Length: 123
Image 1 (cartoon, rainbow, N blue to C red):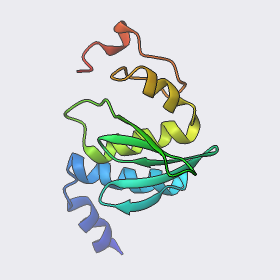
Image 2 (cartoon, helix red, strand yellow):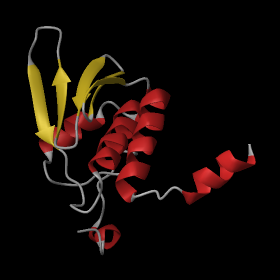
Image 3 (cartoon, one colour):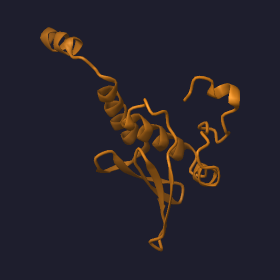
């Protein structure tokens, strides 16, 4: 038992590995289904989303899809981008409409857009 703890402490956790573990936890929490690589299917509200680190797509029952690109800090690990999008969409599926209308603008989880003062040092 003690050797296991010591081995865990000795492992080096890179930001990418930490983000991948975080994504796994968030996927379980939100009920998102792993599709492939870092793509997840999320059912939130009455909508189904396909989320990856570049795009979020809404899949309709009529086989129509709408998508938009995810705006994220370029230094942020891709798994963390996916996890953030999953959390935000699970908490407020209507965020997608705002994201689609105002592409390229970052939003808080409560649906409000970040103000200029909030973004200092963000990009």
